[in-house]
Image: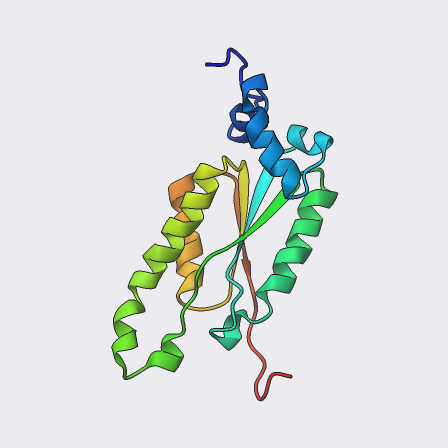
Length: 161
């Protein structure tokens, strides 16, 4: 067990990456693009609800990349990850509707799982529909870490090209 105390500004990520015995963790993070200086920055999760399942979320990947750029530009280290989303607007009137409300819990649980396992210091959650927005908010409340929710905005009408 390390005697290293966590940084006051990196309460979650410091114990994961600072002690010498955490070299394997750092090695894995180098493999996904971390640089040596990134280990001293707050690690901020960017929870993206991007998918092609529903038009509400087709553009969320772009917002996630812009959010990551903002986090990195402000001196943090962004880590983008995805969660699920569903469209009850598409599944209306079918057996698929039985998954609609429970999907909020699945989304919240998946965000909490990544944030907890990866020991991220803060969260930017980006949602765009009536299932993933509450799921993101539920996760934020449960995590009790610095967090910002970004609404993906309204969808365009007509054909996506």
